Length: 168
Image 1 (cartoon, helix red, strand yellow):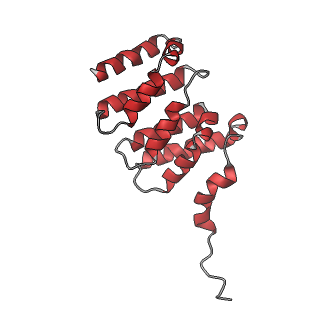
Image 2 (cartoon, one colour):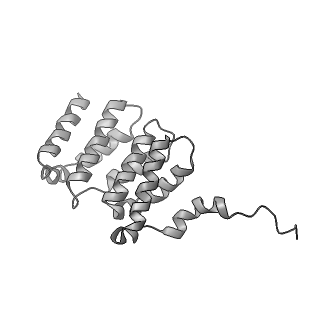
Image 3 (cartoon, helix red, strand yellow):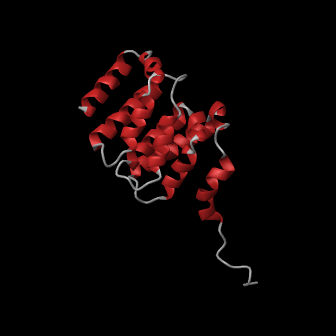
């Protein structure tokens, strides 16, 4: 039943993006976040359908995208949940479309930390790298990126010294 309702909601947003204003007036964003975060009581298909709703909403509406969605996605992407890869992909897309929100929820840091992990598929790692380069290269989006603080983890691998201070 939940899955059917989620699919109907997704199609309503696809057909009429202005429908999101009605959804915000209700408690629907909170309910959707409860479904996507509830590993025990929600099936993978229900959680995936919520993620699709978030993606459609992100792509269709700039002004009324609830910040609670990326906050939920960011918290899931920090866990070892089986849903982690989908959440990282969502953050990657959001870094291009809405870098302001991505920065607010710590999405850039999550994306950079995920580059260091070896558990992600290589094609997703490449997409993350291309997305980060795009954000850095776009002047209007660059201001949301904390370059030195966020990139330190990546560059520290290449800048660490092999000798200690006692070996002089």
